[in-house]
Image 1 (tube, rainbow, N blue to C red):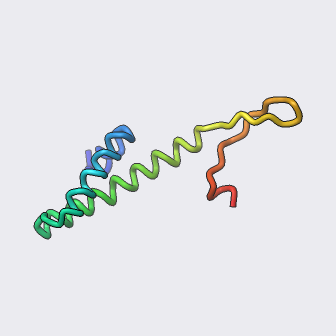
Image 2: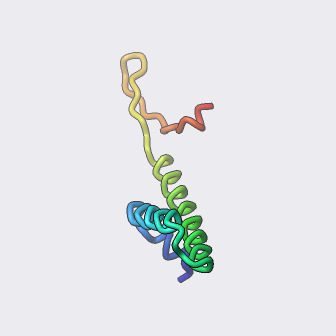
Length: 83
């Protein structure tokens, strides 16, 4: 299993926690160059995985909206999709 596949199998919360940890380590600026590059690569992959999981979750959400006195299910639209 590749690194990306392992990351994709993580729950969103765990992937986000690791991404925050990677950011903290990079912000310290104490990692040797090779380690900083590896952390940056890991962070980019984690950000991609988290984004994909959020997009999937948005697609699964439906809104219950009242129109003309009755309740109707509509797909959730993000602010970007509304523009």
